[in-house]
Length: 106
Image (cartoon, rainbow, N blue to C red; front, side, top):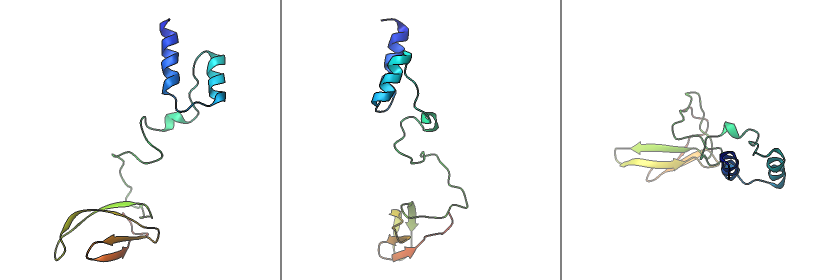
């Protein structure tokens, strides 16, 4: 098998879940055609989640589903809490209670 044939075959296996039309186009062109917009996503990313090194803009407002890393000291000691903002815009801190954080700026 020539090198170019192996390259195109390997490239076909790297594309996500090809449909019948994509297979037809690849066969017609003799090479795979990149899915439109696929270059906008990071390789290996799952869904639309931002990368681990993404910084949060200072004007970002907290929303339901956001995860907060909170450290509490004093009469309650909880240095590493991972809290999710619920659908009502609250987080629940053990031994403290619910705190409304919806719309709070980062």
